[in-house]
Image (tube, rainbow, N blue to C red; front, side, top):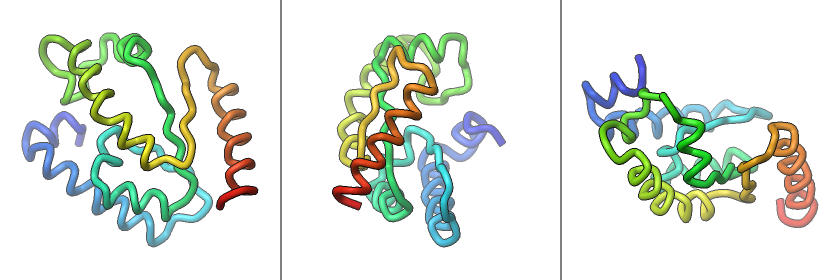
Length: 134
């Protein structure tokens, strides 16, 4: 089922509960994997704690204008339905960014970077963190 369908039929709380249950189950069996979460998953403190136990957490930071450009024409995001999408994105970023920064081991700005540049930066930061802290 799509996220929009779950939101519409069961609501956001149900969806977030499923996210938490899923990440808890993954934490019992995952090894050497990359997990790309949805934007809401780290908002629950328990989920952020699980992510940190799973491994190296990277926050791929993006500015509002980049989000709007990337989501142009995307109608699948339940929290961005209706009018004033720009205002909604701005409010979501204001609320979420501090939580993401708290949860992450490192923050990587992705604006105006290629995938290759982002990957190189993540690897470089991982090596630094692994040597000094992990």
